[in-house]
Length: 192
Image (cartoon, rainbow, N blue to C red; front, side, top):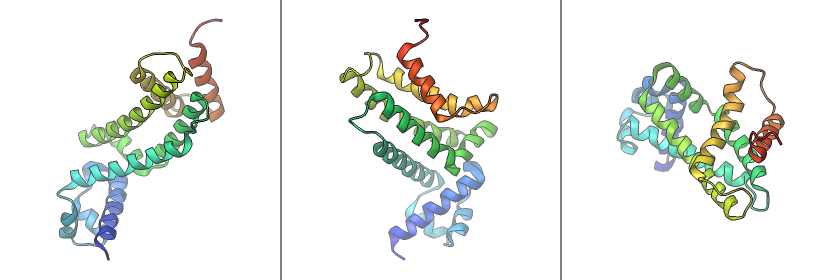
């Protein structure tokens, strides 16, 4: 087996282990067992569990960037692009077993490495959104404001309406979320 194939096999096995057991409980022995390789083979590619975890997160972030690049259309209005890209990213996040496990681990144990990993994923999303917000401001599609704040609020609004809201209320459909976000962003809380 080629070195790159072996490296990918180890990464896939490590991702499976992190998704099943979380960051804290995953060991290099487990990864080696799942990958069906000797533990020493892992160390030919990765110095430690932290490096392996970081590489998996980089891969996830690349996937998420690819998803957004596929969904955002330059000829579409800003809000349409926001809705499509946020829907795609949040769907990816909700279906990705490793990210789900990291959220659980942070909530239950506060594992610093899991928390840091999730922060890196969120930072990557925010960086991308900030570029889109800045572009929309330059094109006059939305008013001038602080792109970092606008991006942060957009992300948190979507996350809250797609997952946090559902914990104590009936789940909202995508169309409901899109309509609310659009109305909220276009009119704010103004009564007119």
